[in-house]
Length: 100
Image (cartoon, rainbow, N blue to C red; front, side, top):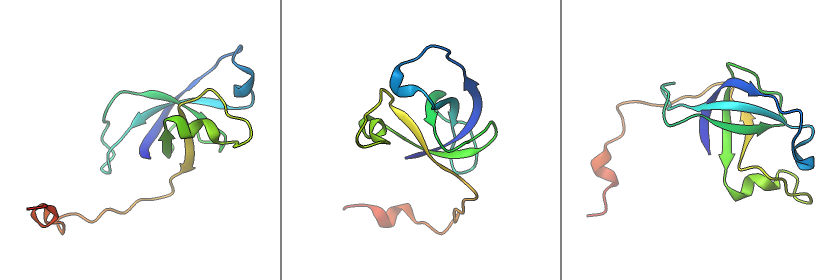
C-alpha cells in the first residue's frame, strides 16, 4: 500500500466493460510529510474520493480482485480515504534495526 493525494480525474467515454461504474483518478504519491514522491499514476475508485483527498492505494495483481468473482483490468485501486495520520519523529534509532 502507499499514500497518495488525488490531483485529478480521468474521463473515458469508452472503456473496457469491467471498468464501467469505476471512476478513474490521478494520484500523486506522497511521503508521510505530504511531499510528492515518484510519478503520478491512475487508480480506480469505488469509494468516492475527490481531488485533494489523501488516499490509500494498493497496486499490482491483487488490485484486479476488488470483486473476487469478477477480476477487472486495473493495476491500482483506492482502498481507503485517509482521515488522519500520525507519525512519531525522532524516536527511532535506525542502528537498532540492523542485522549485524
